[in-house]
View 1 (tube, rainbow, N blue to C red):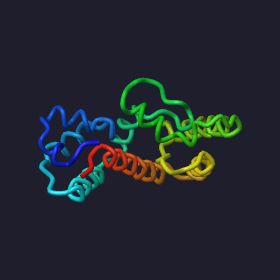
View 2: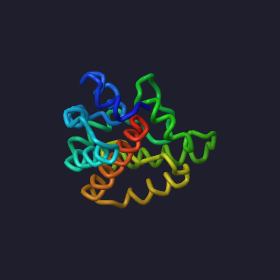
View 3: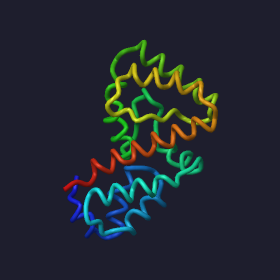
View 4: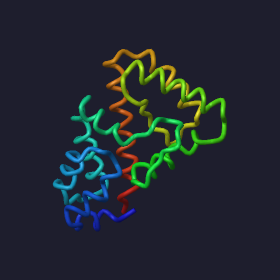
Length: 166
């Protein structure tokens, strides 16, 4: 984590690199970097949230390119994979029954909506995530896009809070 004052002074490329693990949306990252300097963390978070409010289905699809299936151990060395491993720590336990239920739920979700299931895993148990997955399978396509976008915003803002502090 770096201090907000340091973030405000970074060269644009370094600031972009710092924010890149928050979400795989370079336009959002570039807009947030361009909005510097921020007078406070609250101002940074407000701007980040406001920029994220404009996301639609195209941004959802682009961002999901960096998200693993929930319950599967994310692979790779990229920052996205490392963050996903940490965020899904409650799901990655050796509970084979839960793992199989999530695997099957993921398959049903992908067949229904054509993309991976996205949920803010941090702070949720594997059972809570499985229950949410089952409930969201009943959503219409439009409802699910709205829910998935809100989850993407939550994940992004949590990652931002972990990257930049006082």
